[in-house]
Amino acid sequence: MMPGKMNPRQLQQMMKRFGINIKTVENVEKVLIQTDTKEYIFNDAEVTIMDAQGQKTFQIAGNPVIRNREDDKISEDIQLIMDQTGKTEKEARDALTTTNGDIAEAILRLTEE
Image 1 (cartoon, rainbow, N blue to C red):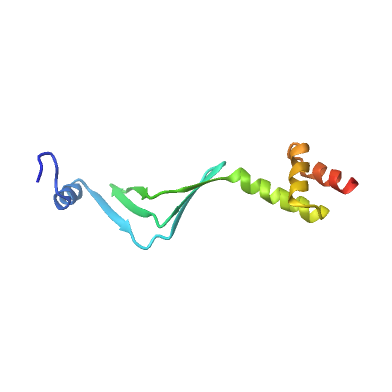
Image 2 (tube, rainbow, N blue to C red):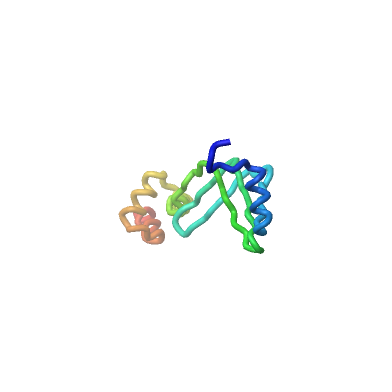
């Protein structure tokens, strides 16, 4: 063993003495973190829970897929415009861009043509 390094068993025993318990969550399929603008999606993540005197800390290890939540909203808006007007996705997207995101105005413009 190299100086300054502690084997995992010794480390775990020392942590227990300080009242810290670590547990691995088994069979994790997906972890999702949502903010107002983004989603962080971890597929097959490794999740560890550290309980220190009743305070739980979750550690997530893995590579997230990061999605912009605004993209989902725009897609829903475009689909609504397409459904209401019978226009193509490109026409709906262009109308939404022209109207600065105003769905009602985009629908009106496309139905007036």
